Image (tube, rainbow, N blue to C red; front, side):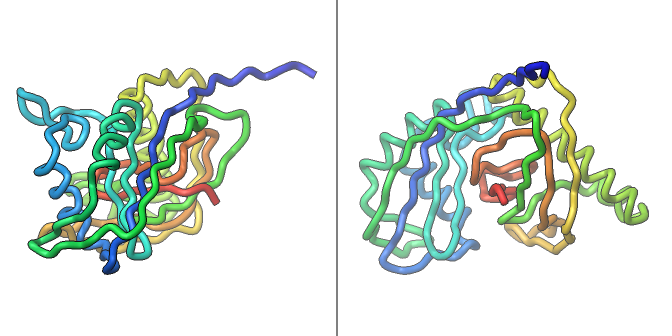
Length: 225
């Protein structure tokens, strides 16, 4: 049997889980992000440089699940997140103080990149695949065409993420969307179309990484099925 070699990258990721004395709500993610941006000055936290916005894949991502906050630090984002995690004793969100009663930092080296087999994932927060322009085209498609459109966008999202993580994709990415549905999403007074559901791909993506638009704010979060 021929040996098939597939290039995999070990991606350093720091998971910072925060449990507070009062449960947090998903709607507080912008406040959570804003708290850390205001308290600590780091490009990795807010994707801005001295010249303005920096187009890249966010190296620190903010999420809230089941009342707890999760901050994800990737590559250099893991370093800054480790530093601020040790200093943070409380959160102040919209002038309300939340005491941190439990929290842990977990640094892992996880597989990232093309695989020789299909992997199953699900979105545990809405994937913002569509902007205003491509949604106008999307809503006029039939079901099969919509599926193909989403698959192409997802492949593009994986390629874009890989570019900013300095990973060269040297194999064709395959994606199969299944068991998914559209849902209305509101963020800062704006309406978006989000996608919930499952897909398969021949690509390793670590748990809780986001993909697509507004991933630093908790959208497009993935988990292996």
